[in-house]
Image 1: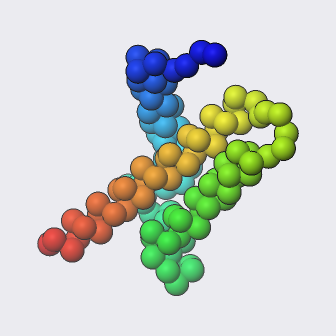
Image 2: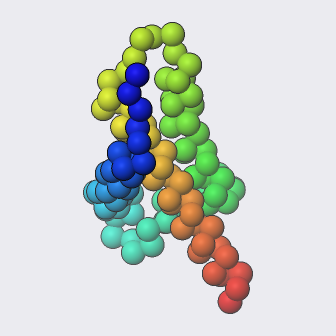
Amino acid sequence: MSYIDQKEFHRIFQEQVRECDRLLNRKAKEYTGDNPDRLSAFKTAAVIQGSTPQRALAGMMAKHIISIYDMCFSQEASFETEVWNEKITDTLNYLFLLKAIVKEENDHQSN
């Protein structure tokens, strides 16, 4: 049985980060339009839902988490690599966006 060593894991990690960056940059205009606030979609969703940007993001991210969970516990033999990549990348990007929301909130509270 083969295994992933530290060097290969680091390569996988670096490629995933690059893919996350590519996708975030590609979708920025789609989700923010001309608004310079990268987090505006979550703030707008929060207003619509009477909630917070964190909770709005969590609700949107839940779909991806549930999909990954379902794939992990599926009785099917396997899923295409592209499907795994899409779900993993989307979920990681939601976590990066959550990090930005938390940072913005902490910065605002510090001022």
